[in-house]
Length: 123
Image (cartoon, rainbow, N blue to C red; front, side, top):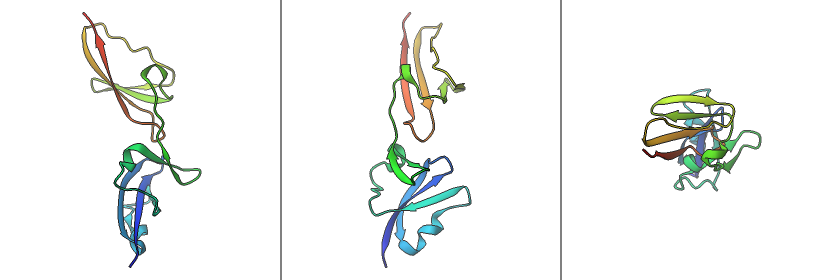
């Protein structure tokens, strides 16, 4: 019985889970019609593949998620500050009136890394 590595991904290319099973059971790894599966011996399922890569829906290949900085966010994206989501279609200016330490989380979809930035606002 041949064993195969696989990745299960959603309609955006976000990898939902990875694993390995008998090759004949790879197609059964999808929970429903919203999921698809790719099989490949080259998929290193121990290498945080679900955090660092996504499935390019045009080529059905695993690709590295792209990095970015806070002053050059990929657009559109969602910025989360203190539990509140802000949809951004243009580069935001992030400023705080009250001194403190703020965590800014950014999600721009599966093509880009999900990142967390910490902003110190001095007194």
